[in-house]
Length: 198
Image (cartoon, rainbow, N blue to C red; front, side, top):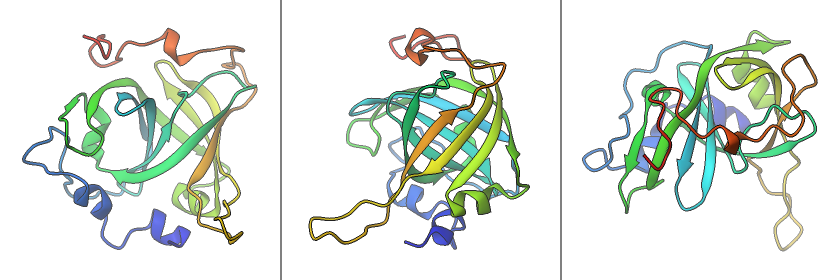
């Protein structure tokens, strides 16, 4: 799929909608797609494997990445971030349990939230389509300058180049950087104060 389709879908949230049964899951159903930019959320998601979901508001939807080890303030850490389907704006506040048998089954909390500000661009969708977005986060846990950069494409078993939705999430060296900072040392929801176990 070309990068422009990935970030400028002709039918917003179509992939998200197709993967879910809204009669069974408490996840928010897609509503009207707005034009906003500026909010973000990170959810701690215990699904098949524990991971964190980073979501940035871009063109009225939440551009999303699964970050297996979670985001960090450590500028020496390079975090894998796998691009996932866009999510509706209602996901900014979503906490709950996605039932067994549903896509993404498991419990999810709002681990961090706040606003973000793109750097070196006023068009984050185009920056993402080009493979690199620099931005500042202003969250309750995450603060400072970050970069999302798409890594090189993978090769299949025949040596052919394949499309890649693998990215790296990096925290830059700034006043908010903390060497060795571990997201697992901060497990509680910023929305409710609860952990995934509660």
